[in-house]
Amino acid sequence: MNRQIVWKSTLDDRYEIVVSRTSPYQGLLTITDAGETIFSREVGLMFNAQFGSDMDDVADWQEIVLNFIDNQRKS
Image 1 (cartoon, rainbow, N blue to C red):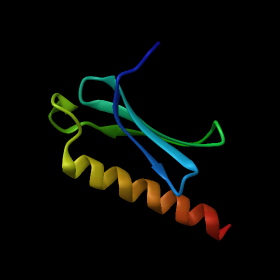
Image 2: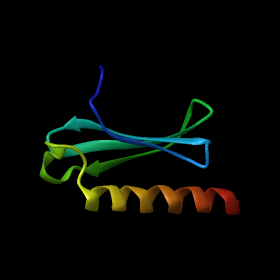
Image 3: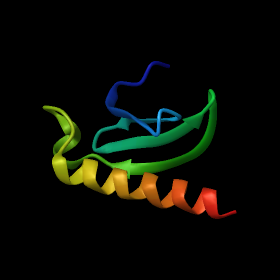
Image 4: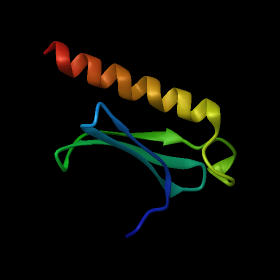
């Protein structure tokens, strides 16, 4: 099933981050490294991301991603 991509970004020219819609007001945030999914988490989509991703959602997603990546590097 092709899910609609709500937001995507690249971190450190290495990690691909994607939030895709799974149902109304819900999405799945995934982080991949070299094509392998290393993290995924359900996230909410404010206003159903009807006109694109909300700035507050993006800030939340960035925090989730940075916390995960920073904790990965410590191990």
